[in-house]
Each structure stands twice: as structure tokens, then as C-alpha cells.
Length: 631
Image 1 (cartoon, one colour):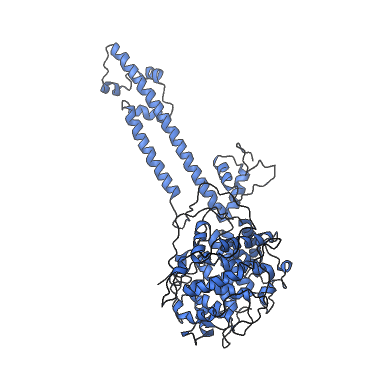
Image 2 (image 1 turned 30 degrees about the horizontal axis):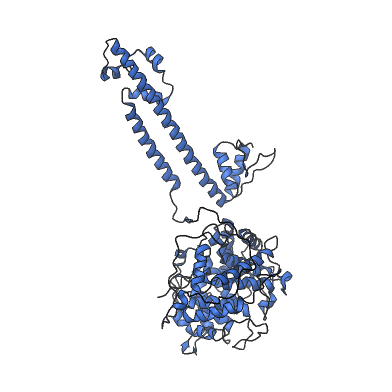
């Protein structure tokens, strides 16, 4: 293949070499094809590759359409110019002929000239003006004595109408298109500064949350999130990320223990992906009770994760103080930490890290959709945690990056979750346990599966509505109805018939909120969690409830839950969470930006990668998911 204009994306191929289409060179290949620069074999190879990759085919067709429009516009301008030139030339010669005939005393009326063309025999007219050389010369002859400016004006009007119709046909907007608003000037990436302050504000910054007066009912006091029409290109971002299709989650027909009108909306937006980058990210962080300190800590955590990612995209937990091989689930958590800050497979400083992580997760998926089946868990058999966490990462990546391969893998993971792993069929579904089709479900595992399906629904994937109904029935069976500080309900046990625990109450509360239950009906659980605020305690073994406590696991789910509850619940929790995480993040050296594994259970089993990913996710709470709006 030879290219007339050298390109940095396409090179002259040696004989026998194959032209490979990528998202980096698809525009140049479309231009080469439009210009007729591709050899027949290369063109066939391009067509073959595009047929197997819908995303590349769409990009190629869009570029080809633009080039076609440009070519038609330029061609029309050339035709118009030629017509004007010929019309002007013919008018000038006609005037010369008229003057000559007048000098000879012959009839020069317009009617006479029109009846005989230019008033000369054919051979004389051809000698003076030239024989018709093509369509436009013939057209000019046909118009005869019509004024040249009239003909030109009519032709220009027709040409303008034609180009307008062509442009409308090619550029007609798709209602599903994402409109990207960004600054024209590219923001220069800033080098990571480990000296940047990560301490809690010495002078608290007033926020709308802290300034809000207490309310009786409901306890949800978040105002509606105002989405800015201008996303600033800071924090190493170059365009807007998707926050999910809220309309896609409004058609879940559930009944039974609760009627869910909108999974993930919770009555007004809760659970949909928030404004995760640039000005929107910073604004929501400050508004929710974070700010410079929390954002600096998130950046430091992501920098550590990026430095310690393996070349193939996963994180090796055994290299970083992990006690067991739990790489699949921990890789899913690390990917979620990047996604939570707005980095996707397409945009952001860490887009390469996200892309490699997602590709590795997809490589661990089996034909039936299960992910991480080769990885076992420390406390119990099965791979449920690995699958649900990785499935959640795929769902969010699918919604934010809109890459066909990721979407297909995310859908396969959803189908495995609802059709193969969840217990029961149809209206008899319940929830999930370590192994597939286990009737005795538990709250901890089921929480991750609900989060996966919620995000999948927001991403526009196909999710069986019966799976949400089954989850609600299960959570109803493990909810403790007694009162706490005058509020009933909202506390949850691990399995049916067991005692409530802190960890499982946090998980049960969050899932019920995202499944549509009113926060006012769950205040008992919020009161219960408020009695054990997060703290950094290396000797932490048992919590207030006397059960084994996992500090980071408990803090992660409770942070998401209290953010959705809002009001004084969130203010008190947020202050304690920042006091737990910010002063204890490692500063300087190889471990800068990470958190040490402390406590027990998952926190020490999965090691430093797990702790750092979970810490980042806690501090991204302000913009990761939209809050439930006030009613």
C-alpha cells in the first residue's frame, strides 16, 4: 500500500504485510480509503476488520461521512466557480457580438438574438464562443439570452439547498449521543507532588451539608445535585465521563415487600454515577464535606496503585503483604477506585491503567460469564466475591467508557449472576452465597451482587427484574425490626435467624436504599451505626456488637450508607472517616499514598492493595454515586 501524504499513523507496508485498524489510526485509514489510496487487498482487509469490531466500524463510518460531505462541498464550490466563469465569459462575448452587429446595421433585439442564439451561424458562434464542451456549456446554450447573474443566482440557491440536505442527513444527532463540553486549551498534566498537604482542614470549610438545619422526617437532606453545564478540564482529565443512564433504571416492576419505582434512584437519583471529574468532582467533594485534603489523598492513593500494577493489568496481593491469592477481587476494587475518580478506558491520566485492568478481568471470565473461578477465598469456598466485585467494575467501566468489548463482558457477568448463581427461578428467587444456587444466602455476598446489578441497570444492560425482587425478599428475612433510640428497623444480620452485626447492617441499609426503600424507614440502622464511628485502631478485634469487625470493610459500606442517609448522620460519620484515613495514609517513600493493613479479616488477608483501593473509594464518596434527593 502506498500513501501519497505521509502519516504518523499509517506507513507504507512491505509486501505481504497486513494493515491493522486501531482506534488510533482509524481516521487516517478512512481518509486513505476516501482518497482511493488503499490497494484492493488492503481495502478488503479493512472491511473484514471493521465487520468484527462495531466500535471501530462506527468510528470509520463517521469519519467517512464527514469526508464525503467535505468532498461534496468542495466539488460543489468548484462547479459553481466554473459555471460563473463560463456565464461571465459568454455574457462578455455576447455584448461584443451585439456591438459588432449594431455597427453593421443589423437587428440586435433580445428576441432576435435569442431566436438565433448569438445571431450567428453555428460555425461562427463556435468560432467566437467555443463549442459546448460539456453539460454546463450545453446548459448555458439552453438558457440563451437569460442574464448570467440570474442563472448564477438560481444555481447557487439550488446548490446551497442540496448541501444543507446532505449535511442534515449525515450529521443528524442521535438522542443517545453524549455531548462533550471541554476547554479548547489542553491542560498540562501536573506531576504528582507527595508533599501536597493531605491533612484534615485546620479551619473547616462550610458546606451546604453542614449548614443545613435538622429535619424531622425524612432524614435525607441532600439537595438535588446540580450538574454544571461546564466541566473544567482539571485533575488530568480531558473530557466528560458518563454518569449512567438514569432513564434505564425506571422500569423495574417490583412488588412484594416493597415497590421499587426506580432501582438506584431511591426517589431521586441515588446510586446513579456522579460527576466524577474536573470541576464537577471538586465542587461535589467540597459540597459533601471533603475538599483539598481528601482529593489530595485520593490522588496519592491512585498514584500508588498505578505504580504497583502488574504489566498484564492485575495487582499481585502477595507482593504487598497479602496472605492469600485474592488477585481477582482486589483487581476489581482497584479498577473501581480509578473509575470512581473519573478515569476510564478512554479518558483520564490513568486510562491505560484502567484499560489494562479491565482487559485482565475480561481474560478471567469463563464462557458462562463467571469471573475469578480460579481464585478461592480464605474463609469459605467459592468465587462469589471475586465475580461480583469484578462484575461491578465491568458494569461501571461499560457505562463510562462505552466500549463494545467491555459491555459484552459486563452483560455476560450479569447473566451469570441472575441466571446461574442466584438461588431460585422466576418469582421464587432469593439472593446469593459463596457457591451457585445456595438457598442459605448471606448479606455480605449479596451486597456485592446487588451493587453489580444496580450499576449494570444504570449502564443500560439487561437485568432480570426478578433478581431485585429476590434480593428484597432476602433482606426482609434478615432485617431486625426492634427499636434503637426510638427508631425501628434497619438493622441486618448475616443470615436468616442470626444476630445483627455492624458490617451487615451497613450493607443491608445501602442495598435497601438503592432498591428504593425510604430512608425514614431505616433510621434504626443509621442510629445503630452511629454508635460505632470509624477509627484507626491497629488492635481492633471486636466492635460494639461483640462480633469480629473488619475496619476498612465496615468503613467502606457505612460511608456509602451514611452519605445516602445525609443530615447529621453523614456529618458525624464524615468527620470520623476523615480522621481515620487522612492522618494514617503513608507519606513519602515507596509506600507513599497507601494504607497499612491493620485490624483483622479482609484488611490483613488482602493486604496493602485492598486497603489502598478501599481507602480511595471511601474518600470518593462525595461524587461517586449521586445522593438520594430530598422529598
